[in-house]
Length: 265
Length: 253
Image (spheres, one colour):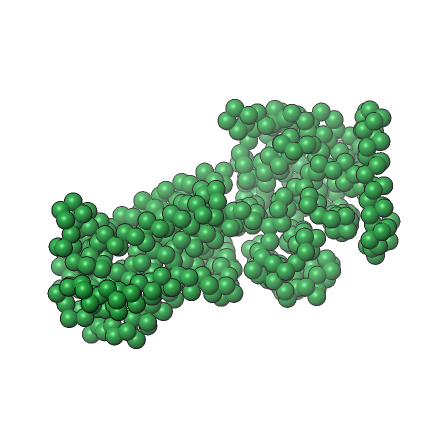
């Protein structure tokens, strides 16, 4: 996509994790996770349900404390410099974290004010237009579709231009059109220099978006590389499965007919 | 980080107050039960209750105000639970805000909503013949006690709001609080109750608070009862805040 890690004297990557461990009582969810995410890149953390993806994201966004290991985000330690980490990040959780009773615009203004910015109205209007929500801006979010909520959710995460954004399963529960809308939004983010760590259980999503993919399995990163590197590792049967999914989606999109598809291909 | 505490609390308070303005049913459902009880006890049952006072409405209003607060604060647990469920709580916690502001906004929202509910119930009581000749100081004392009691119960409501697993669990805890006034001097004088019930009634917080409010409304000396009432309110408040903050810290770390 854009500037992936170039060799030379580079500073510490914006997301730097070593030996991360976390247990819930007897259950060892993370058993030593290592990962680095380069500035301005999209990094996909793949894994099945319960693999610990959300736990990694929650630790990195200071919502949860790790049992062992170290994690630094934008150069700040998540355990000891929580406030600095929170200044540097935005989190879009698994469920669209929007206020349903407020309007879309009010949601954006609220987040802008909580980030202590000026001209909150102008920021809100700009984001509404960037995410094609201008017309819906004055409506209560409770009336929005799933895709619109998710777009608003991501728009809220962009306020204040945080250098690092975590997207936890950003397209789970969305229909194919809405997924494509979210993908477009994520690509624009990385093009603007934002570092994106996204978790997903959809292989095609990682394939579509990520500069680098890591697979989290039984508490450890078992593979970490570019799509091409991973393709060489995976058994052919799995590759076939990956290729099938978009085909069905193409059929669906062709039958339903959508303008967004044309834009993105 | 705390330099933003007041500003962040104001932003989040504005958010919750919008919720109340846009779904006024939270106020309506809060005042329906107390008003229904007011009507039932004044016009149906009150004639058979001898309180030793001339007006049963005047006797009843303090207890009804306590019931209003007890049913109003359950919305704090409900709103907090909804925030946790919806994920917006985590969004706030992952942002560079004063983290305590999230709780304080809910507590202040409860205070505002309860004051509105109390005023509505008092207006209905006035229409039904409630009268008080107490002066500004008397009303200030009444308001002070009601605010303190609201704060105490609101912080209590924060605990189930943070820990409940379901909406019913979050708001259901208030039912015992609503029924506490029934075993107190709120509806009938405690002297008519059998021994153990009477002992409980006379030593639980509602009786001392109700008696104090009643004395203030009737311009009678409050005696040492006001200190018992204030001690109960302050005691519940301190314990509830301590437990709520401990629960909150556990929840966000």
